[in-house]
Length: 327
Image (cartoon, rainbow, N blue to C red; front, top):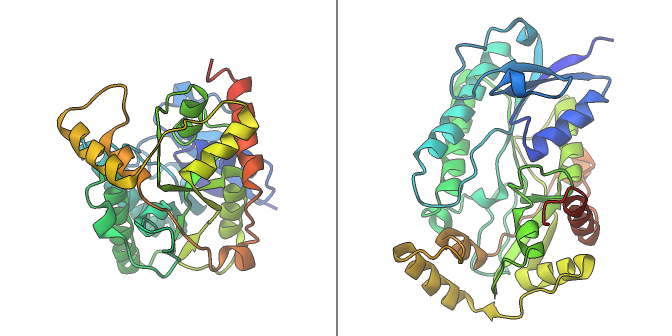
């Protein structure tokens, strides 16, 4: 039986590396990574050099002739309000290009977005599921989430026009082992390095990257899927989150917890007068929110199950310590 080709954008990232490893051992799929620099690609996995923002140089590569599907993971994650233009271009135009490529290859496109497009609230009592509206008002001043909402909306519109089977998946914060660039697990690393002078009375929602990987491969395997899936994991207050980190790492959490109102005032001050030893004002504003999502379909249709959060955090800390990331 011939293995079916699957293109992965963002293959060098945290989730991309986990998907690659899983597909390499999958007898049904043959992964092809889209990479910016072929010479720096160390894996034996097939790779094509190119960018999601410019299809022309690589879209007709012979290896993409019988493409089964695309995992679109590539994105720029930048939470600061400073100079977001490149991020907007990459996150929106790059996604639309993948819709165009999927149309030309007549294949399924799985676009990994973020739960923050719908699940951002002032109250811990509010939740979003796959049918919830975008939380545009809450995230309008945060370029990353704004770019993702725009990417989702425009991709849905273009996919409908081009008859592309588009599946949008929205995981929360991804944790677990293997985040070489520390893009997602940076919050854990900063805690281990004692770089949090205080906590904020907000929340966090996270899920294990290994559980998300398994569900994503399942989506590609099924004959019929839904247009949107959420991968909900564990919702905690920031205080509870750092209590578990303290337990699994032995590093003491900050004792000072700022009320949300104080954190918002501090964020406004830092917008005008930034201080290098304090977080970016956007991160402070985000810390005052609650990121609650529910998965209505992932468990029953994909077999998705989030593991114990303590296991995820313990494995994250273990990997960071073994790779000397916080020494």
